[in-house]
Amino acid sequence: MTYDMTHDLTHDMGTGMPPDTMLSVQDVRKTFTLHLQQSQRLPVLSGLTFDVPRGRCVVLGGESGSGKSTVMKMVYGNYGADSGRILLSHQGGVLDLVTAQPREVLAARRSTVGYVSQFLRAVPRVPALDVVAEPLVERGADREEARERAGVMLARLSIPERLWALPPATFSGGEQQRVNIARGFVTERPLLLLDEPTASLDARNRGVVIELIRERLAEGVGMLGIFHDADVREAVADATVDVHSFTAARQGSLA
Ligand SMILES: Nc1ncnc2c1ncn2[C@@H]1O[C@H](COP(=O)(O)OP(=O)(O)OP(=O)(O)O)[C@@H](O)[C@H]1O
Ligand SMILES: [Mg+2]
Image (cartoon, rainbow, N blue to C red):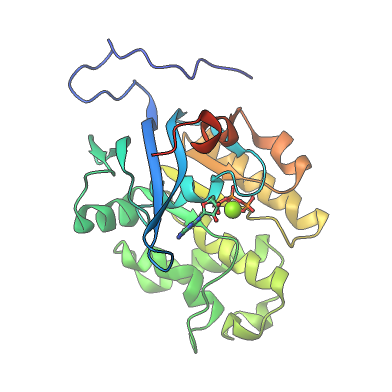
């Protein structure tokens, strides 16, 4: 499956957002300032441009250190960008994450952008079932109904019911990762960011994650992913962005 990832800016001069697109990254530059090293500047990305259409999965490729996680963190609003635009379809409008206010970023996370990180940030003493239900409760769902849906997700990911009432802090790496995936997929946010969600899973659970991804794509969710496993990548990717080709130093544009 292929599609045209280039922009036709004539479509929507008002927002610059191509139609049927969840995310449009346009000419983004990112430089880190190393405060511990005489404020030395480390240019990482320049001219970064790609779109994530609704119902498509775009994969970030490129060697270690090329900037894949940095792209994810900019799209989630954890890192700023020096310049360019990161346009998000959000509640019927368009939000530019490069210039968004912190409260707008938080609103975007609540209703529009989900993030499945590689590791679960385990909150002490909160049972696994509530860890998974929390994003639904945050969005105003009834707590019992949220816990019911959380249980369905945990069961699909083969987390035994005896573990649901326990905090995930003592779970195995793979169990924690599955709780994390359940939490990321339990809501229906229209853009999902997946940062190596299957790194410590066995083949069976990787298969479940592929199923979950495909279900969400069929519902029109846009996805941006980093996948360590080639089998997962091949099963879900509609397009690949080679982040390395936007690496600033390689382009001789040391700022
Ligand atoms: N907060 C930061 N401060 C300074 N430099 C950073 C920061 N985060 C990332 N970098 C640097 O930016 C570059 C890109 O890092 P990034 O983590 O995005 O790479 P990656 O493509 O995700 O690599 P990997 O495949 O190993 O996860 C690296 O040189 C890294 O050292
Ligand atoms: Mg990374």
